[in-house]
Image (cartoon, rainbow, N blue to C red):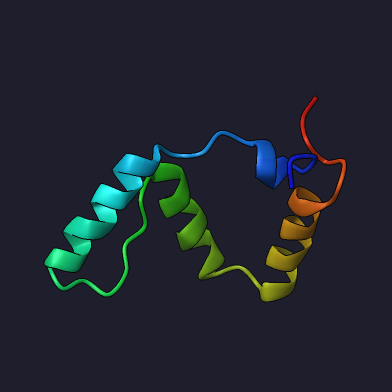
Amino acid sequence: MMDTNVGTTEKDDAAEVADNGFEAMMKGEGDVVSGFKNKVQSAVANVMPAGVLASQHRKMAEPGSAKK
């Protein structure tokens, strides 16, 4: 995955994501999305057709798609 866009883009801080998940679990929440960008992507994914999402993911996960 290190030669793909999805594998090489900057990720959210793992400790912060884990903390958000733990806090949600302690509150009894079923799921949580950490980070503004992920929240936007999650919201868009709920209204966008699956075929469009699959096409976008293919472009991001395609070998050689990493930013140089």
